[in-house]
Amino acid sequence: MTVKLQMLDPECFEYHAGFICNSEADRLLARFREELAWRQDRIQLFGRQVLQPRLVAWYGDPEARYSYSGLQLEPTLWHPLLYELKERIEFATGRHFNAALANAYRDGSDSMGWHSDDEKELGSEPFIASISLGQERRFLVRKKGQKSFAIDLQHGSLLVMKGPSQQRYQHSLPKTRRPMGMRVNLTYRMIRGQTDSDQQRQTAE
Ligand SMILES: O=C(O)CCC(=O)C(=O)O
Image 1 (tube, protein in one colour):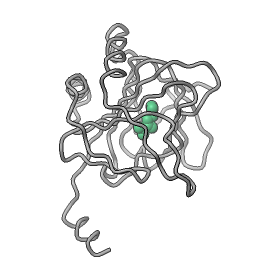
Image 2 (cartoon, rainbow, N blue to C red):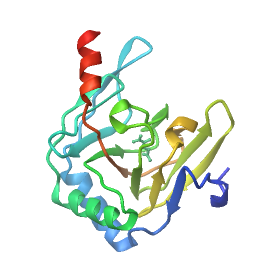
Image 3 (cartoon, rainbow, N blue to C red):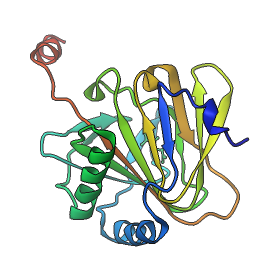
Image 4 (cartoon, rainbow, N blue to C red):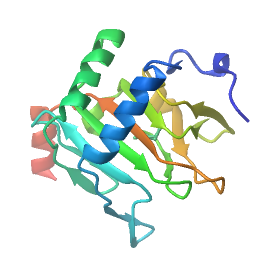
């Protein structure tokens, strides 16, 4: 079921189709798929080491270290086009970002499981700007413990997750048996440095 966009909780989500026009989105997709430092990491899942079902790349300012699913990501310095796009999203949203997680879904068997972006480095109400390039894929959202709804993320679109979205909702990008081409997703984020009290707590643990 595709969501009627007015169903989206406006405190938590905004969807902007055509944030990037088609011809430019085509050009960006071609550059990013060739030029980003893609890697496929192994993660721990139910006690087993498995390959993540997608490629990832982590870019940002030198202090923007991020850990999720047991991985510690050290940022690669900004690719100029990724930085240019960051400035454009900052201008449009009035928010600042110091890092971007890029995901590449090579075909319908690549996916992202249910999760919230609730790592402590993101703060309690992260503002995440997510650009989709290439193959349209179905993005599922559910309020924790409730039925999910779907948004079809179009080439060149911008999805914003903000406010209490990561406390109230989980999201995923499921596998599909339908033939699918490559999709590149760029999620711009603000990584907050550790506070002195975080560091003291960790030292004490
Ligand atoms: O590919 C997508 O749109 C989902 C990305 C995502 O859930 C994430 O990076 O946390």
